[in-house]
Length: 207
Image 1 (cartoon, rainbow, N blue to C red):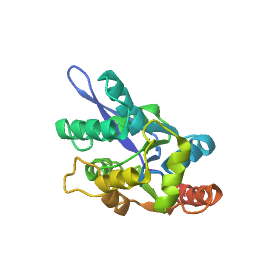
Image 2 (image 1 turned 90 degrees about the vertical axis):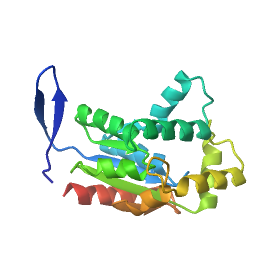
Image 3 (image 1 turned 180 degrees about the vertical axis):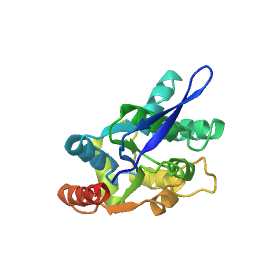
């Protein structure tokens, strides 16, 4: 596949156009605990992708503001940035970093429809989505023990319901994001099955 793109960079007087070789930039969306990180780890370790994390981007800002690092803070800060700048502000920033790297990259994770609409303007962007049974997903987040995952099952379900649908393009809408994906993975089996499915898609895209 031989797709090329250009970047416009502004100096004091003129716009300069830089031709870049084709790189693949994947965005990934999906439900909480479905396996987004598993796909990211596979692409980074086996395919030499660079990882650009919305979570890490938000944590930097949350810590600068002295807020608690939890899902409520992440949702609030993300929604604020999208409302203040643009629905796609966060992922646009990460996309720019990916392009400047000159390597294949994966942006984790896409949560708002406005982000997808902006990223679709780039011919080398592909959207992955991953989902799994809700009980399995809760078991997974309980095991990983991150700062945002110390919650009971009822809170987990409530958090997900809040993020699954909205009419506001600046806010999380995982349900609609999954519908807009180019490739959807169902991660109810073991990790090897997921790796095989991802490998097949990457091979198909690169043809």
